[in-house]
Image (cartoon, rainbow, N blue to C red):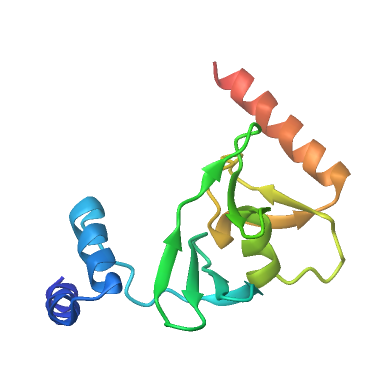
Length: 148
């Protein structure tokens, strides 16, 4: 915790957008993700786009270097997604899987292991076939019914 406070103090002295993000996360969650890993998944004429294993999405201006964290939206099926200009929607679970989970068998679907569609952490995702996805859903819904 002392290291987090020390890093927070040094960030706040810089008075940048990133330092304000740190303060917001610290006050909101009581924690700061200090060493979040990022992989680029796209680029437009003005921005580069990145995804983390936790399902966070950010963009960085090519011209100014200013970083912006994108707030996820929720679609009608309950999945988180972000819109990248020019108006293309990307589901966050697919972005995380494509960036961090090898798909050696070329399976087409991304499954949420815990059935929580907004838990896009890399540890909660796996590549599956349509059949595997249906079996997983059926099995876990049956377990929920038995627990009632």
